[in-house]
Length: 163
Image (cartoon, rainbow, N blue to C red; front, top):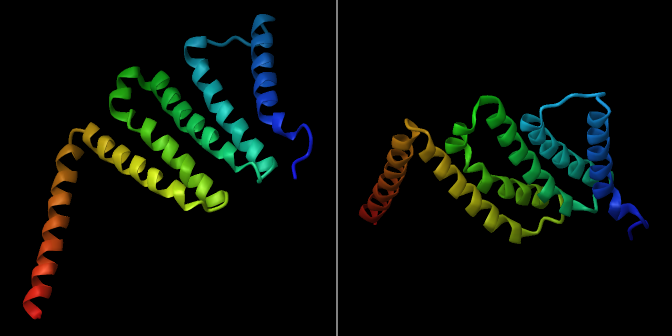
């Protein structure tokens, strides 16, 4: 049973926070460079979703958007700090972000096993693309796959010979 008015906590906090930031900027109380500051707002939105979940643990659906906003916000903060060319390497986190949200919903929610299959698929794809993005890792992970596959075949061959 949910309390009346509790479902509007997260959107209300987001709107209040954004309103305060813009109002303070308009009055000159704070001076921020919108070209970089917007990424921190995305991070803040993720934190607000997580606070909403922590305030009412029955609302584990807030974990998904909260995690996506946090991961994407961190990516954007990183790019505003170190340059947007970094997005060429870190873009796979767009796949990993919802996977982390699904893992969070599974672990902190009702342990719905249906969340695990897409979470593992998105994580695997994200990790493969992430490894492919970095020049030196581009050669390491295919070699690791070959070694694992060869090891599996060798074990099967040894089992077959011992029979």
